Image (cartoon, rainbow, N blue to C red; front, side):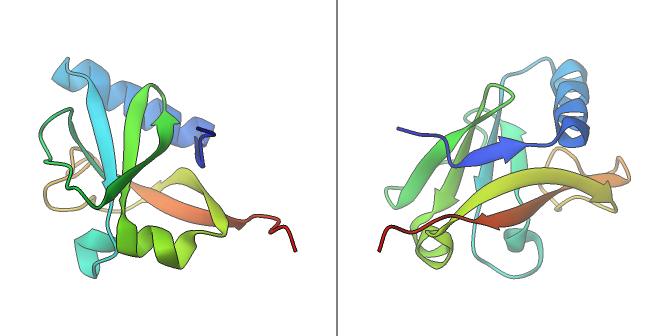
Length: 113
């Protein structure tokens, strides 16, 4: 499997900070919902139950990154870059309360024609 997700240096630094603060392996999930569901959410590994319809896109900073099947269908012609911006993280995401949050940026892939 080829990773379809990458991480910016700024997001990697936030990930390192979260890992140091929580002393746990981490994971990410990107759903297709509104509000918090449209942001990549970080959890302790196993702190979010991955469903049968979730897909592993790859790993960022050693953390597995899952996406819902419906969101993958919408973004299947993109690679994802996980970045960080100023703001509050998702309510249940480990980045909440740090005044920085993860953000998903999509990069269009070449589609064989």
